[in-house]
Image 1 (tube, rainbow, N blue to C red):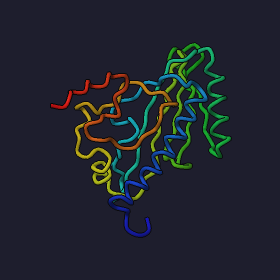
Image 2 (image 1 turned 90 degrees about the horizontal axis):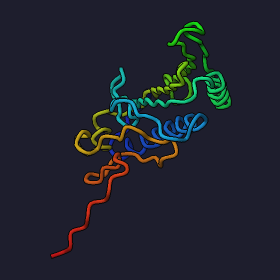
Image 3 (image 1 turned 180 degrees about the vertical axis):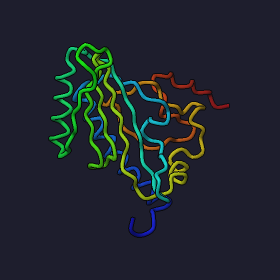
Image 4 (image 1 turned 30 degrees about the horizontal axis):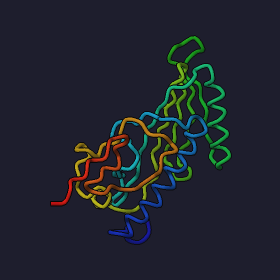
Length: 196
């Protein structure tokens, strides 16, 4: 890493660019398979929380999504993913784990240390369950400072947790507005109280 890590607004702006770029890519990948709701992994892999890297003053983002599709089409899904990644100048490694008659058989497509990703993994199980896991490269900036800039000290478990599903066509946003939990979908707006 050359030069000092960005701080304050510069850190937020750079992180937002990194986030929107990697999330846009993953959303496009998801859409090649299904543009309906995908299940979100646990909070730690929602996609926006900065994760500490091994080096000082570095952060990354992690994401985990899954969906149930037609298991009979798993080879076609794998071909679609492989074509998408190859068309985006990546070199996916494709493996089949397990024998044809094993219930746990799955196809894995893995990309390591390419583009914005240290790891991009797509698993397609025999039963049709598809999982995408992404771990970005590390970028310069303090994880704790970035987390404070994103979430303003709000406790994500108090109304800011993501819903358990998200469509890759949902609008992307970066950070939260205190008092306006953007992670929450399909909740009625609070009734306005008349002015005294």
